[in-house]
Length: 302
Length: 169
Image 1: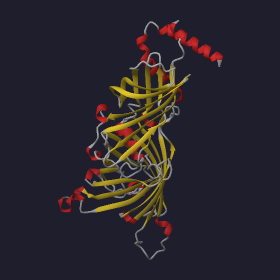
Image 2: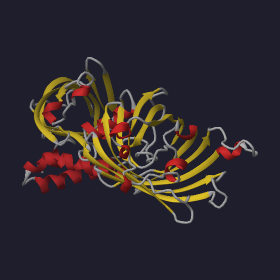
Image 3: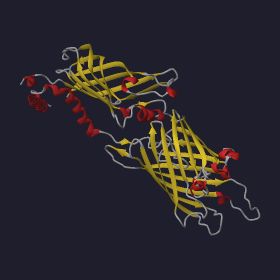
Image 4: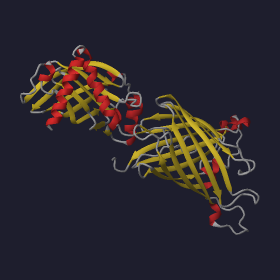
């Protein structure tokens, strides 16, 4: 204790002499001192808001609903715009998905939904394996796993044969590797595996592979441009399907996020839009669509 | 030589908290941080305080906290809010007592500095001082704009309360 005081006095003595010539520098010194002290105990800063919401257009982003937050999602896709004025450029037709997502913990989110497209029910679990961070612990990417199970709810077309319940099911496993490169730009890669218990034709594969890529580009604080594309691996795709490409905007107003987009996919569950898209952009098989997300805090805040 | 004879006069914040509230017609938002750091040199009367913007907790929803950091404070670009300057009054803090002083300096939020004089109550005890202060901050002074849709939910003037215990080291 006494030694400490002596050392301190010595320090003051010497620094006092050092700075005696230039007392004007003192104010900045206090702030500089604060900065020096803070840097060593600086905590890890986890990146937040890589994307505005949990979906890019059709597929998932690395984002989760916060713990205790219920996210109600209503998604609409109209008909293709090339139907012309008679169908009001597709607006006469609509498919929709109603969904509920819930943040179970900081890292885990679950959700389910029902689409009018093939009367599909879907449920998923999404878990953040790695979180992008800076500071003490540095991690360049956020990695999430998404597992989805989908149930096709339509009555069987062919009732003369034996139809199994399991034939209605398909499974999707995705890794979502995303990074917020800057305030304005976030990118992600989505390697995807889809298993269908029942393929439409006997020579079609049951296991399908695809790699997705997407990103968002902030135009203003509350408006961003999004792009999403899935490349189906040749040989592991359904013949006659096209790769889904979606372009759109996220508009944020308080607790809502509105997503307006153009896409060539009608389906909104992974199996349907990644491996079941038939629309071709170059032929004008493009649909206008929107997602509305509204969050409600239902769990305990902290 | 002169300095060596003087007692240790630099006080450091051991426990500091800062709280703010936005009292708008449609919504009351409260948040606080316990990560207020600061130094006060009683001999030169100079001080420096700062807080990490992303350390504020509270808010009504998780999304609100995200918006606070992303859209309003832009805490990635401006990670700290700070106040540094000099106390106007000459006070002998070695004498225990309660002193009302004015702190004058640069108050920086969202990367925009304003010269402010803020009233502070300082309670001096042997080896320690505690400071308390309440003041308001106009968002417009710091280039923070409120979008029309949240006009009723976000006050243009934010009330700030500060409490800190400082001790010599």
